[in-house]
Image 1 (cartoon, rainbow, N blue to C red):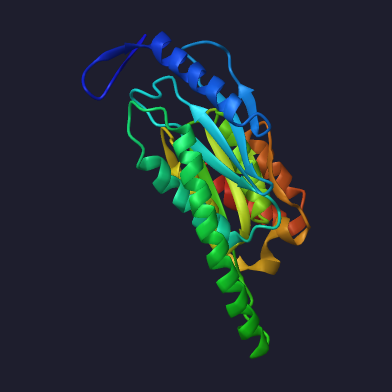
Image 2 (cartoon, one colour):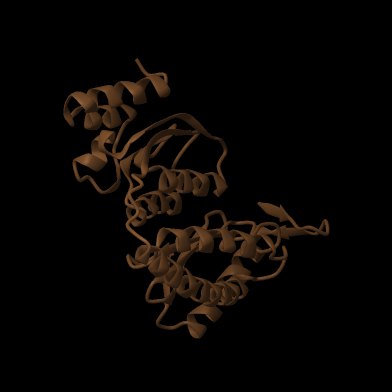
Length: 271
C-alpha cells in the first residue's frame, strides 16, 4: 500500500509508519509524564492513537491516519476538566481546528500543534478573567431571569466505528451537561438533548470530524423541563447496542419518553 504525497512522490505506507513511530518516540522523550499511548498495532495499515496532557484541565487526543504525515493531517480532539466553562470549550475547540488546518502536509506537526494550543490557552485565560469581571458587574445590576431553551437532536452517520469518535461523543456530552444515547456500527446514530446552545455546539463539533456521511435527521426545541432525560437526571451520552435500544431506553421514561421514542424512530425512519 502506498500514499501519494503533495509533490507527486509515492511514499510507501511502511515509510509513513516509520516516521510516525519516530515522532512518537520523540514525543515520549519530550513529554515523559504527559504522554499516553492509546492504540498502536505496529501495522502500517492502521491508525495510531495517543494522548498528551497539556495541563491539569486540558488533554489532547491525537489520531495519526496511515497517510500522515505525507498526505494527511492528524485528527485532534481536546478534552477538558470539569471547571472549564462551556464558552471556553467552544472557543478552544474552534482555535484547535484552525491550528490543525494551518499545518503543512509532509511535516511532523504534533509538537507544533501542542505549542500553538498552549498559546491559545494563554489568550483564553486573559479573556476569561475579563468575562468574569463583566459577569460580576452584571450580577450587581440584578438577577438574570431568562430561562434557557431546550433542544433535542437526532443524528445519523453512515457508520460510527472509530474509538476516538466514540470517546469524543461521550466525553463532550458529559462536559456540556447533555444527555442521550449513541449507537456505534453501521449505521451510527446519536440522540442528544440539553440546553439549546450546548446541543448546537456539540452537533457542530461532531460535524467538523471526518465522516463518510453525517446527517441531522431531526431537531425539536422545547422547554428544559420537557427534556425527558435531562429532567430525570441522566447525565452524558450512553452507548447502546442497536438502534431499537435507543427507542426502548427513551420509552422507559414514562409517557413523555414514549413520545420522544416515537420522535426518534420517525426521524430515523424505523417502524
